[in-house]
Amino acid sequence: MTADPLPICATCGMQYAAPRPDCPICEDERQYVPPEGQRWTNLRELRAGEYTGRVEEEGPGLIGVGTQPRFAIGQRALLVRAESGNFLWDCTPYLDDELVARIDELGGITGIAISHPHYYTTMIEWSRAFDAPIHLHENDARWVGRPDEAVRFWSGREHRVAPGLTLLNLGVHFAGGTVLHWSAGAGGKGALLSGDIVQVIPDRTHVGFMYSYPNLIPERPAVVRAAAELLEPYPFEDIYGAWWQAVVRGAGHQVVQRSAKRYLEFVS
Image (cartoon, rainbow, N blue to C red; front, side, top):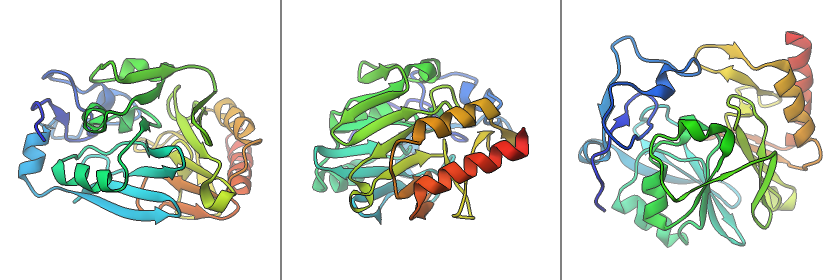
């Protein structure tokens, strides 16, 4: 695999179309510029260093895909083994020939959707490696660091990308903040792939909602209330967050509704 040495922010993992002195993602109040300042790398440097891809089962029909050791924000993506074909939820910065080959052995990727701009990372590299379109909500279009014809913006609150796979724009964290509902997940009981739009927290009896996680800015009550209402008619048993083993197993729908109620009681 060859790749242009396009700049990648070492703090958030966003790849940009050309060198630049700033990273808009990091300068936004939902992220941060480290005290030592902005640092840059690229895929060539990452591949020549200590990084490798990580592929592990995360749950029934779900394969986790990430980078080891941890790089940038450190999230892992999820490969959904749907009947219509593998679908990649969220994205991770690192990609090389070995990782492409491992995913090809699993059946490749038919499409990509990403929860919010912090995880856009090297999405164009992934799209080109697997010839897969990228589905992003139009409310976050301005955050795309590397525009490309593979990106398909959608609008509204609900968007079906394949049978049984529905994107839901909750608007939490970012205006285009999106989760993926997989109706066949959890043995047919439904699974919610939430990134950190709906954050899986250490206490698995609840989830969290934040405008900024590193800077501890709570999400606006009206946004959380609307998100809970949008999710209410969708059944799901399990919730898969943005990190390795960040999973709520069982009663996921009740966990979200209970958490939203508790959140609104505390911030109102």
